[in-house]
Image 1 (cartoon, rainbow, N blue to C red):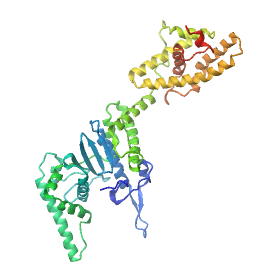
Image 2: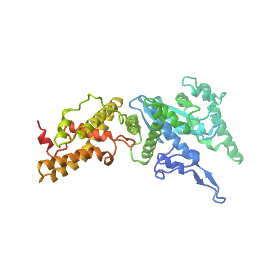
Image 3: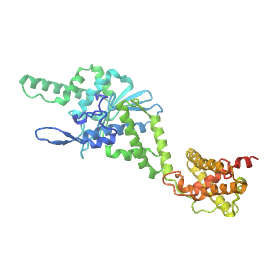
Image 4: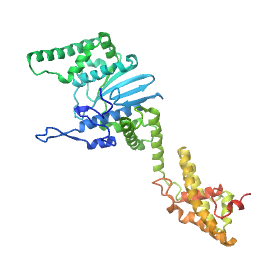
Length: 435
């Protein structure tokens, strides 16, 4: 069984936790020195990819669950451990980067190593509530008795007999070779065969009834596409980008579980929260200035407070017409965003607060500068503040989203806030408009 103190044991290579800040860094760990006399360098990328596959398969598994209590852990009781609806599922993963992955047979080292892992885990689980899954990118041979493990309802008696015979053959041949002083064969399979034969006969059959083989599983290169297809709540054009971000978040969580920076189990609710955040980010990034060149209806009149605010600072006709135009555009844009995506409400409110803060810094300073000025001079200062919102604010305040280009939103939102008296142009606008 894989130790929780290591990232993985695939291909006989142990990767210590703490050596990699993220799973992406595993890509850099693709070589290991062996045979110091010849300085031969062996490619260890399959080992790194083997663990990366565990992590991504765990995400796929959690995405397929509907139970609210579903949760997964990586490298704990097994490569991947799933809990859902009171049941526990243990997954042993056999990934291959070969074009034609090896098939799973009675003689497979992978099979007997997996059996050994599961036998070691038996004291830690309730067999009645646990299923064991061998996930392989390869196929089970068509004529193999292991085919019954691909069907959860198939009888296991014939397979049990074949496994006992194979395990006994391995043990006998090892014993004979040892007695004869020959090289002892079947080393990688020995522990699994011996552990299987040591089980009580009834436990062997019970274990087999809880085992399932998932053959021809997706490879690591296919997982991003598969994850994107599971995100069917998103528009098709956003799914792959969302899948890539979800995988990046997931990688970090798995590393944290192994480094002790968070609990070992990752809950389905955490994944759903991450997906919601990614959706919101994607919505923000694709904001389009839909009203940039759209004129308001000829008979449109803004709220009376807009006109009163501008009148307090002796605004001209051009100030009024520009304010009405931009207020209409911003109002329509805000309304459309909320209709299309209700989650934009919080984004809009947060940006309103940012604009109000920029206004407040200027308004407070202006009010201080107006203390010794006469009324006309105070109004002139207020007019400067109003015109700042049109001429300079769109370039001085960061946009509502990185891709946003519409200056009308900043200009018009200031007018929306002015109608609600959250901002104003005259130094004493609150006092003058208190009625």
